[in-house]
Length: 387
Ligand SMILES: C[S@@+](CC[C@H](N)C(=O)[O-])C[C@H]1O[C@@H](n2cnc3c(N)ncnc32)[C@H](O)[C@@H]1O
Image (cartoon, rainbow, N blue to C red):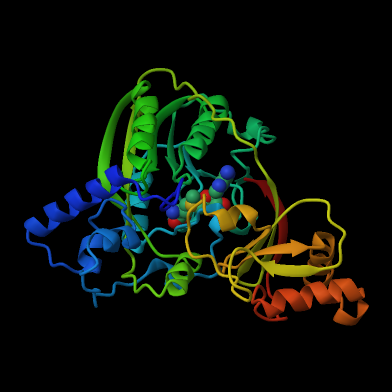
């Protein structure tokens, strides 16, 4: 969702655009404080802001963070940035006023609010933790429960996809292939300074949607909290980040033409084995591996397992085969022992003594690096997705 570095060289055009925006804000009278500025910087991350103006003071301003009341920890592979309460109020009021059928995709906070208010709608999400009406991975090829989505009446959609064009293409493809007819689509859109390629990628999405009807863009209409995994990346870099700071635009398409699928972007997908254990979410990249259990820190001096960025292209994230909602990235050997130990101990409630030596060792290693908080667990779920 955030910065996306293709090379370690700073992108000069991108830095110039950040500098220009910053100068504009300061010349319009804003205080030279990170908190005041960051929320108006069209997605530019704090480290980029500080790269162009290291003299900015840290804001003492602190606003309630949506993520502090997390009932569970969102997982980075879900790109799970939770809306702030005022955004939940505003978006759900808009959807409450729409005639049925309404479809909410990938926005559990909006779905929860609409349920509380008694709205009839369909909620689609791949993570079973949020108890969607349809548990569907929208980047997977097949849509096994698609018949339940048939309707003769045009629908209103609210989509909050991960902020990358390939995800947006996959989600809009799903709508075009399985959910027609479309009346209105409300969808989040990343601001143009989110990463160096953000502005061009925005244009691609706007062009797709414009070919199907009239669009209106509501700038900075969506505000997001800072999830645990992101807060921990700031702590790992000793950055004091005012929260919440992230905003997104809301794009509204009133569909007048047939809603045609955008060109699907081909890329290779990996299968992940996911677990929910208590409040924590774990993800293991699947591969056949029967070596003895071992965990290794990826790309850090030994003993450091925390990611320092939320970028999808962080090389550490590519190499790790274990990613957790508390920001741990590790390379695991002996994957089958980790998976079977979790299933038996947390899933089936077997005692430690009944596990094999290698399975016990796998659990101890995970606890040692801080993946699992405690042996007590109220929630356990096991599921898979592609990414
Ligand atoms: C993209 S965010 C949006 C969260 C939203 N801002 C909120 O406050 O509810 C995360 C949601 O999208 C879902 N998601 C991510 N990728 C998905 C996919 N490929 N198919 C279906 N759901 C997906 C996640 O499971 C998660 O619930």
